[in-house]
Image 1: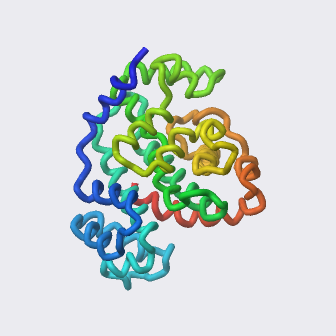
Image 2: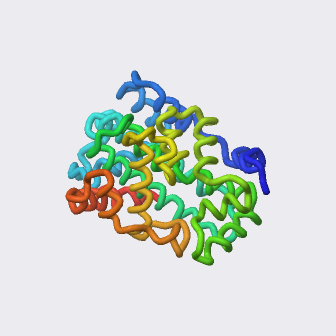
Image 3: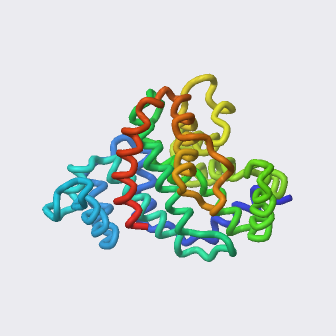
Length: 280
């Protein structure tokens, strides 16, 4: 059985965050981050700036190559959306550079993370949930604990997947048996080390068991749970077999009072996601 400490050693094996990503993460905890400040941060990374302009000039936004400055892009997308996009591009690039054990797919991990992030953001816009501006980042980072297990304890990671592949137990039960911790709790610990705001950390920690941290109220963890399961049901999974048999998307949204909005939500998701996934 492994300790949290041994798993968290994987943090030291990740490439260091770029100054750009550090500033984007820090801005999440500040309410006074400005359009100009965010644009200045992104402009310092030519690849990131180019990708942001490519996105805003895509068919999704309909500007057809007419936006040629990051500051103009900020004005079009808004502060939160642009920060979300910039963070997802920066973090997925970071993950791709890490050596991973056999059976791990960085491409699938990135796609599932981004799909969950987009869905979390769309759901949070439709329900009265605290701190909706943190939904995208919570969705993007909800499974970082899986990454750390794979990096720090590759043999145990394979053992977890073998146990899970038998199809009789939930993934977190398998993790608890093999290493004495779950990826969701580890993800929350990582986000605490990265100084992300408490609502984002709680959403990630409880995304498989919102009832344990919701005090009887709708919380961001419910949103991330629904988004995670819908992403899996749509086929955006880390493992070919998925993360257990998910319920139908409508059932997940019914609990949030959004079942009637499912068609419109999925249509908007596909529009945003199909453009974003070309960057990963």
